[in-house]
Length: 248
Image (cartoon, rainbow, N blue to C red):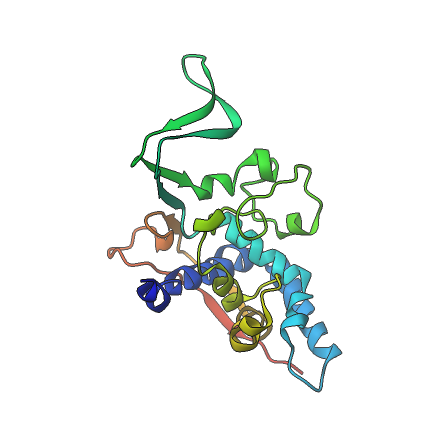
C-alpha cells in the first residue's frame, strides 16, 4: 500500500526545497530576489480585480526559473536507490576511463544488486549544465542549452528520478511551491490554486537576507538539510532575516 507515502511523504522534502531557495540563492542574490518581486507586482497590476490564477503564475518566467535552479543546485534527496530485478547490463551515457586506463561503456548488474544514483552529482554535471554548473544562475533555464538532454520527470533534472519508478509525488511537490507544467485539470482545480502561490506570496511580501556571523553548510544524508557550522545540536536550521515589505 502507498497510503503511508501519501500521508507522511513530501513534507520535509518540499519544506527543505523552499528553505534552500529562500536562503542560499535568493537571500544571497538580492538583485534576483528584487526582479522576481517586481515580476509578481507587475502580474498583480495586470489583474487588479482578481486573484492570480495558476495560469498567471505559469507565466512568471523568472519565478519558475529560480525554482528549477534551486531544485538543480540544492537536490534535497541527493541519492536515488534502486535494486536490479534481474541480471542486466547498464549502458553509460558517457564512457568512463578507469585508473588503470580501461574504458568502460557499460556496467553489468546482478539480480538483487543495489544501485545508488547520485542525483546531486548529475544536477551539477558541467557536461550537461555548462562550466558554471556549480553556480546558482536561474537564467540558464531562460536560455537555450548547448547540449539538449531529456532526463527525469521535470526540466531534465534528476531530482525526482525518472521512468516508471520516478517520484510519485513530483507533481504535488512542484505545485506546493509553484509549477510550470500542465497536469490534468482535476489536480490543478483541487490543489494548485492555494499551493502554487506560496513562493510568490512570500517573495512579494517579505525581503529575505542571510543572517550575520553565521555560516550555513549543506548536510547530506537521507535528505540534504541545512546546519549551522559550530552548532551543538544536530538538528537542521535555516536562519533568515525576514523583513516585511510595505506596499503603497
